[in-house]
Image (tube, rainbow, N blue to C red; front, top):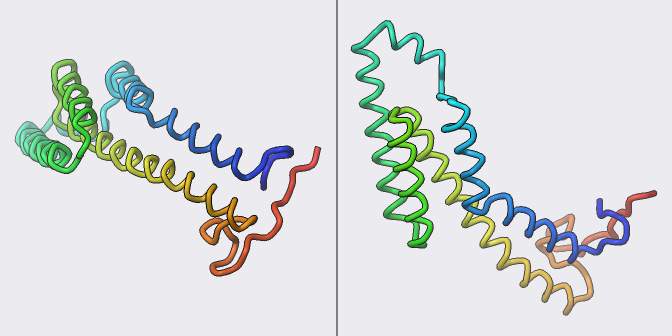
Length: 163
């Protein structure tokens, strides 16, 4: 469904702009910091209570979480091509490590960094495709095949919202 008086191009532009704003590093990590650092959230809080009564298991779980966090961090530093984004991840993880030194929280934050990297790449691809879709539509006068309802066919007329 396309809102009244808004074409496909305008809808696509606004959608991509909104997603870029939501997943900009500062915006994304400010929400994660609010959850992990300011609110005091810990992943699997039931395990925390359980492990407090069992020190050997707690040590084993903490070591495993630290190793997993180190692995995810190493993969991020190796696979993220953007140096500014790598620096942002390093700074954020150092902040978590100094403010709340919990291996499970550090592992979770590393996973959030990996999720952000995934979104960053997805959004960059969407922004690049946005221009290509606009050019294809202008040439053909219809929606490109990637936006059509059925593969290999032109898109049907968009449904308009009423009122």
